[in-house]
Length: 163
Image 1: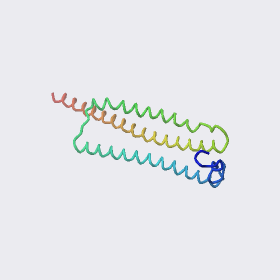
Image 2: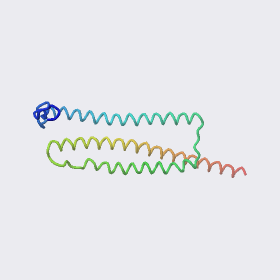
Image 3: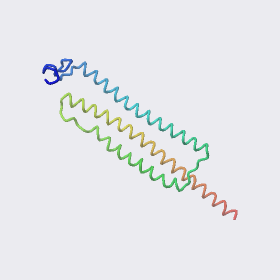
Image 4: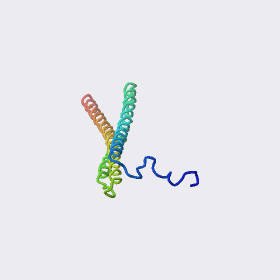
């Protein structure tokens, strides 16, 4: 061959020639599971970091007297609800990923199916975390709007009684 290798050098280094023995397969399965757990763990960690950052910003805003006017809340609330609803749809669609069957009944196809299922699980976990966050924000905005409107009605009623 052109780079100084003979044709016998094209064989796998471990001599398996495409066969994966049960011990190697078990090792690979453990590695795949660890990889999937690490992916989920990393996703959760990123979500928690973002939530902590948001909490800091909200705490700073609350301590500094930050106020969002009701018109801004009324504009943002349906947008956040729309995001939460869209994520719900993505979750429903994502659940179908596990229903995909392997292309064949050989070991390679089974391994591919397992890997695809692990990725589908990680995807769903991420979507569910995002949906929870978006729905929570939409709900908090709705609650704040309700409190504001209730207070506004109480103020109007109080003014009417005095005037």
